[in-house]
Image 1 (cartoon, one colour):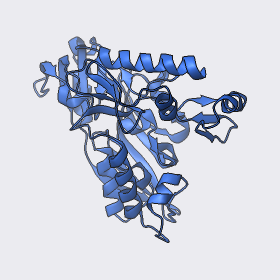
Image 2 (tube, helix red, strand yellow):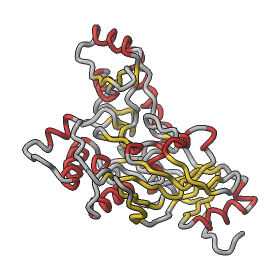
Image 3 (cartoon, helix red, strand yellow):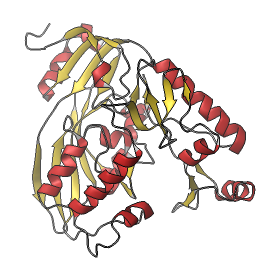
Image 4 (tube, helix red, strand yellow):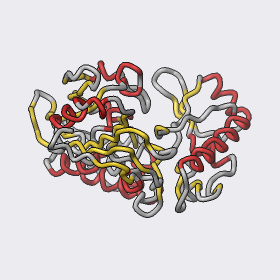
Length: 340
């Protein structure tokens, strides 16, 4: 074994996933530099193990112990790396906290990420999930990412087009990108910044401010999120558990005839995005529990661990909710977190 690898065995993962699921990893290694990643995968015994790449642990649901190697990304660093005609390019290591990056950019006098404040997780996970909130998606600000290919050992840069971003989707979630590890991410932040207040709840929060600054928009987003979402340090959760389903306009119109209060948002391609939380709430799940797994009383889109829940219990609750929604509305809900 490489003398400088701080490999640990039978490692507890409970504090490394925001659901707080008690599980252990056969092998665990925190990665603070590319050299450590290369060294680990150069070891035949480690390279042969199943791999789980872990960032902030806010988008996974552990179904039990992991019989492989957990690579916990800890690569740090935040810097302004270039200035272009209309944007400032900022780069952050994959192991930085996402919210930490948002706050740092605001502290540098840069706007662009403020609508994504307080989203849990790491910078490296942001492009994998194409995180989004309050009318902004990460891809709107994405410039490029440095990526390591575990299969070939090559390091390369991906631009926005190569990442094939979709709604909570990217190339990293598909066969082609499954062996890729994000090392750092760069963002293009506009020099001519304007607040994005297209989201009604955010506009209401900032009513009375003529021209809010990025910090004020971030504070408003943080206030809204804190009212609606439980703190993972207090109640285990992974934020929004289900994606908002996207349906054809014809299906939406048919649903509206039967359910006039249906919450829906027209999409640029003519489809309609439905509010998963509304659908779940209408099926009577808000505040209900199955064992130690429950639906948060203030936001039906959030599943919670009331203490001691297993991954299987959370998954069982999610499946029961999805069955009810599909039976009533003919709409299939997809989980956001990755089941491990």
